[in-house]
Image 1: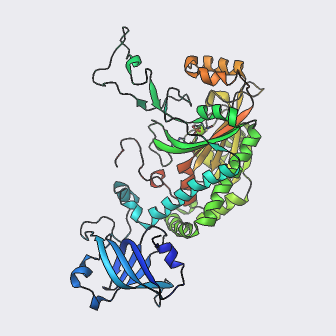
Image 2 (image 1 turned 45 degrees about the vertical axis):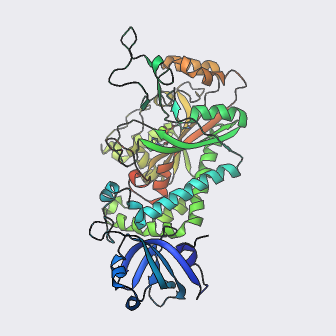
Image 3 (image 1 turned 180 degrees about the vertical axis):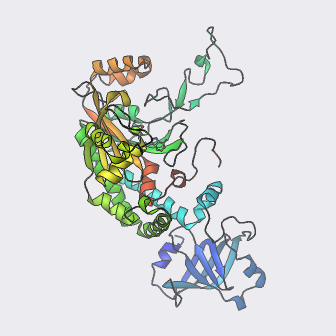
Length: 476
Ligand code: 4AD
Ligand code: MG
């Protein structure tokens, strides 16, 4: 196998010949190349003998160039590294352009880097974030596999609106300039590719439920799409969601699963990505220090992660939460943008963050929400007005998980679908699950990018996915 920087930095096989390929981060004093190949946040120092190196070649060693080096591994006398490479041969694989290359070795704004999303992963911050993202994704599959779950690939194109929010991207092959029409003037989707109206999925839940009703424990982890026009630091139009669904689990078991799962994947990166997290911890501290004192995080990034792993999430009913919010200072002093005055109010992110960051000071699971602010599939409680919903709220993020126990009673579900005016014909198969061997079951959805945001301490969700899709932006 080709050697990489991560492996060589850990090696103590001095005097051995090594071969490396990577990109020049910096080149100083015509002698010291900082080489990075993405295998680690660290660069390896490659020392060249400029007297023996062609001047025309020296000129081509510039930031961003792709090079191959051969040399011997030696102990380093320089500060900041224990080993370095004494280069015997260097080859330029691909030139850069020192005048035009956007990623110069200096601080760039995230805004600028978003405009250069094809190159931003060549910076320390983005390479660290994307390695952590990859590790988290692996940890997700590891957790579920080790706990007896099956991975189900639910469809990307669907005919149903799982969340009933109507915020969907339509999928069509009809000619938009001249679509076929029915007699009543409406578009004739019978002539569309699938013979019906279809959209990109907002959630794989409904299909995952069908598989849970046979395989008992399943999860889906795929892209989901929402055409909500929210320009916030926590919303994307295309994001990845992890959705486990478990037969015979009630809401308590669902909360246990969510908590155990989140702790497990965060613990995995603490154990396996410490170099990157240490770098991100410093970046986080620097960014926090620029904020006004009251807005600064009390914890460092690493402390936050350890706190989540080591402490129980606080479980609080919606009704208790409303009492707390109604009587809290920012509500009484009218500091909230949306004031809470009665039971039934939908919680905004400012309320969720107050509960987590100011009141409980730990992750919170809110449960038993009013039925009319939640989706149609959630199980109705005996009080007739709340449903077995749960949201996991995280510091700095707000809602990271939304889930519920599902309505498993055919009549109750059908009634709900009718009341909400949802087309029951579209959900015939979903209703049939309640006719044949129905059972209590529960699941949740965790927004993967919000998890990556929390774990890496990045303030904007656009900086934790390679190519963010947001309103008015689908570049790259
Ligand atoms: O709360 P949501 O809408 O729940 C569902 O879609 C359920 N069907 C999940 C289930 O029970 N299987 O979304 C789940 C999570 C949210 O808690 C949030 O973390 C994330 O998905 N999310 C978004 N992340 C980024 N951008 C958006 N626009 C998001 N919308 C939701
Ligand atoms: Mg939600």
